[in-house]
Every structure is written in C-alpha cells, then in structure tokens.
Length: 370
Image 1 (cartoon, rainbow, N blue to C red):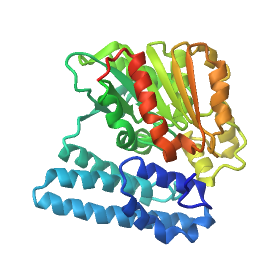
Image 2 (cartoon, helix red, strand yellow):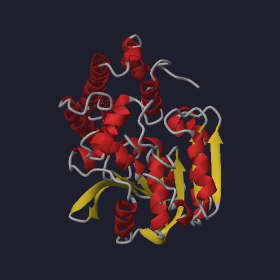
Image 3 (cartoon, rainbow, N blue to C red):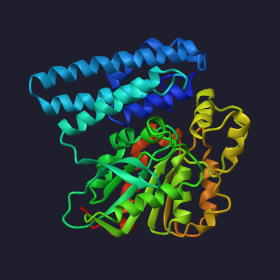
Image 4 (tube, one colour):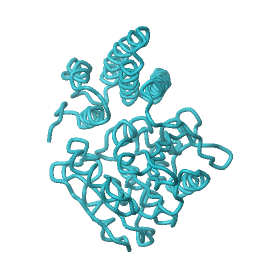
C-alpha cells in the first residue's frame, strides 16, 4: 500500500484523499515534500503547524493562478484552479488544533473558492438548504441530465469529509448514470459544524429523514427511488439511517464502524480530539460514553433494503472485521467487498469500489444502462 508518509498514517490518508478528490500530484508533492522529516512527530504542534503552513502556501499559489486566468477572461481555466485551491485550503484546515483560529479562516476560504470554481466551471451543482428543525443543513444538489423525475442518492459526509471533497470524488459518478445526488453537510461536519454549531450524534436517521423530506418537495426527483451512501464514519451514518428511514431503497457503506469504542487508545490524537469537539463532549471520558452510542448492534437487523459494504484490509482506523460484522447482522440483501490492500476509505484503490458501487446502486434504483 502506497503511503507518502510511511511514519504518519493520518497524513498519508490525507494525501490519498487529496489525490482522489481533484488534487494534482505535482502540487501535492510540493506541499508535502518539505514535511517528510517532521511527519514522524505526528501530534507535535510544530508538525501540525508545518502541515498547515505548507498547504496554505500551495493553496495561495494556486489561487493566484486562478486569479490570473479570471483576469484574462478564461473562466473555465480559472474555475478549475479555484476548485483545486479550495481543496488545498480544506486540506490545510485538517491538522491544526481545533483551538487554532486559523482553521476557520482556511475553511471559509476553501469553501468560498470551491464554490467560485463550481460557478465558473458551470458545474451542474445547485447549492441548497435542507430544512432541519429550527435549522437547515447546507448541501449540494447535483442534477442528473435526464428529463422529468430522476432517482437520487443522499450522500452524507464522513468524519472529516465535506460536501466539497465528496463532490470532488464522486460528483460525476452517479450523475453520469442518471442519478441525482444530494451531498449534505449534516450535524458534526462541514458548514453544519463549523459555521452553524450543529454537533454530531448517533441518531443520523434524523438528518437523513430531513434530506428525504426535502427531496420529496422537488419536482425533478423520483421520491420512490432514493438511496443513501456515505464513507468513513459515514459508513455508520448511512446504515443507521437505512435501519430507521424506510424510504431509502438501497444503501452503500464504506469503511464505517459497526461499534465505536470508548477506548481511544491507539487512535490519532487529532482524531480523538476532533470527535470530542464534534460530539460537544466536555472531556474524553464523556466522549467515550458518546462513542458507545455509535453502534449498529441493535439496529442492523432492521436494515432490510439492499446494502453494499466496502472495507480495506489495510485500514488501521476501522478494521475490515467491522464491515464483516455489519454484513452478518443485516436482514436484507448484502454485498460485502473487502479489498485487499485498501486503506481507510480505500482511497488508495478507489477504482476498486467507486464504479462498482455506483453501477450497483443504478441497478437497485432501476436506472437503465447508459
């Protein structure tokens, strides 16, 4: 399994994520090459600061290139670069402490530039708001190029994915198959967390139901053909939603836990602290109690819709045995794909699951082959 930083798994995962979501290898190498020596320090604040500064430097450079294209009235060229710059700002934001005020600055800049790039590129993306109680959830609606009502996938984020990075990886995969996509920043991630202070919880059927409610108001969505997909911790979110929200006709779960542990031993410090913050826990003891509520043990049997489960054998964050437990517990038809050599979210071998799961979902939602 390729790891850019052999001595730092979280950093290597971030690199693979950037590569699979629209980043350019030479630019990513420019950001990461100066970090090789300090990568071994992992949780050292100096290492986290170095990551932030190096990726910010890259993002600013690509943003300037985009500005130059925009000034020359080359919107498509500028848009592509703005989307990459936005991605790199979001990558910079991943590693520093949650107490670092620069994180929010980088995040705001990232989503602003990514949105600008979508507009200039004339991407088929509509920014929408999903009503959610007294609040709303920001989302991208990616319309399928078909007349009338099309089937639609609800795509939830993962532990640290956002609607922007999700679109960069699979935005076209479902659309090209005649399936629309609603990518939601739900509580605990993206804008919902960072700008609206909506924190995560185990009952993800609630935001999932809100997403379906919203889709049922759209004249371009077939309300009888809606599925759900998510990755990383979203590999818990999506099955949990499917267990309780019976309007979902099919589910894809990628690298998610069957049962989160209250014991954070061995997990990256940044991952542990992020969970504490996103779950609005006062300390790690409280976070551990919250983590225990993230379980599919009691509800997996209620998953009666078809489900496709993906895991990697080299996943050091969520062992593939978690996927096997889920597959054994569901009541409906199940496809389990454990990919040899796959890391967390199998970003290093993304071609082994993206096409396959999208084709499978098209079949489940009754989409004619295109």
